[in-house]
Image 1: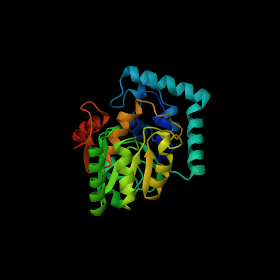
Image 2 (image 1 turned 30 degrees about the vertical axis):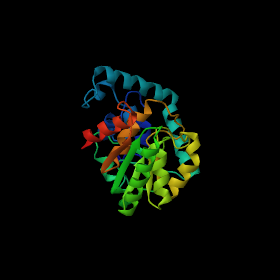
Image 3 (image 1 turned 90 degrees about the horizontal axis):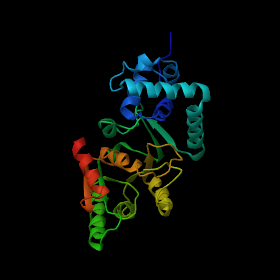
Image 4 (image 1 turned 180 degrees about the horizontal axis):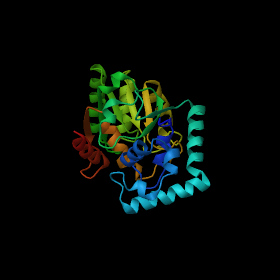
Length: 260
C-alpha cells in the first residue's frame, strides 16, 4: 500500500513553486499526498484542483519539469532543514499540533513556520500592537502603558519587530516580564532591521521570533503585507497605537477586520 503521509518538509518545498500561495500549496499536497507524487503529475491532473486554472497549471507543470531535471527546490529545502537544525530553530507545519490554532483558522494560513523560541498554549490570549516607525512621545508612552496592562492581564503581545511602535511594544513587554511574539518579513537568519538582532534574541527567551519564509530570505517589500496577516491571525485583537492613514499598520487593521 502506498504511504500517503506528507513529508514534513514537503510543505516548504511546494511553497517554493512559482505562483503558489498557502491555499494552493495545501490543495496540491492534499490532492497528490506528497511532493514526490506531485513531481510525477501530468498537466491535466493539475487542472482538476480547485483554484488552479489552465495557465497556472501550465506554469506549475513547467516548474515541476525543471525540478525533475535540476533538483534545485529539493536542494533549497535540504539547506533550510540543515540550517534550522544547526541553529536550533523549530519547524512547524500546518499539520502539527503545536501550530497556533487561531492562525490555522485564517483564510490563508502559512503552510509552515520557522520558530526561534517557543509558542505556548497561553499565547492564544494575545493582542497585536502595531504602528508607525516614527512615533511621537505620546505614541511611545501609550504603547508602554498598554503593554504593561497586557502583561498584568496575562496577554501575550504580538508585533513585527519593526522600528518605532513595534520595537517599543516588544521592549515594554519584556521590561514587565511578559511574553511577546515577533513576526518577521524576512527569514530568521536575516533579522530585519539589523539593529534589532539583540532584541530578537531577548524575545526568543520570553516568547518567539517566527517567519513563514526560507531562513535566508531578504526583507523584500512584498513580504510585509503577507507578514501582517500572521500578526493579526495570531491575535485575538489588534491595536493601532499611532499611524498615518496610509501606513502599514492600517493595512494590518484592514486584514484583522477581514479575518474577523
